[in-house]
Image (cartoon, rainbow, N blue to C red; front, side, top):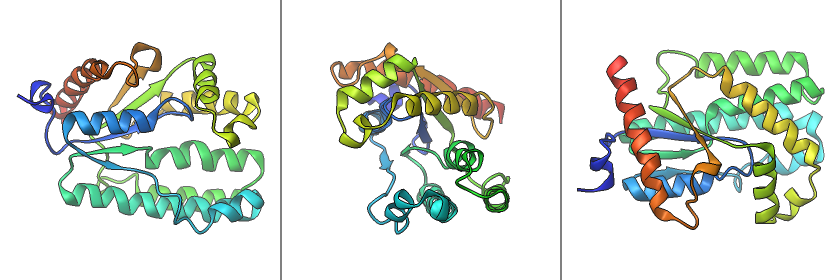
Length: 221
């Protein structure tokens, strides 16, 4: 019996991983995909025509960037379900509007008109009965100290130069976002409760929770 069957996880499940920078979304995505023999859906940044422009001028390009992300994630979400599921998705379509677009608006790098247009577009595309929402969103959470420690540990140059106050703000925004999120079932997992890098078997305790959550939510539908 394979792990998917052992923990009664349907073969057509679509599971999205969410959480702030440094919590290990990519590690969790690949570990779950390998354990379940699922495909991965990863964020594509190399082909983004707005990213470089955005970093040089937030105010001018924030709206363009967010609309591009929305369109790409929308197409990817539809593709996953048209394929028949069986995917682990790194980052969700919901974080763009609930965290990043909102942050640009509140900080003045997106106008009120552009933000309203973006929100209306998001609601029309995503927050409808016709849009295929994931069967489960796994939210990786941890204390600010744990998150900052992991960011320092992995040593990416751009992240090392970022002030701790930014990570503190993102941590707070993510917590506020997930506390009001209701588009699909949520499984919250604390990053201090497992170690996928040094203990591959720790994925099994996560799979057990995933199976229970998905089957419970499907039973309620």
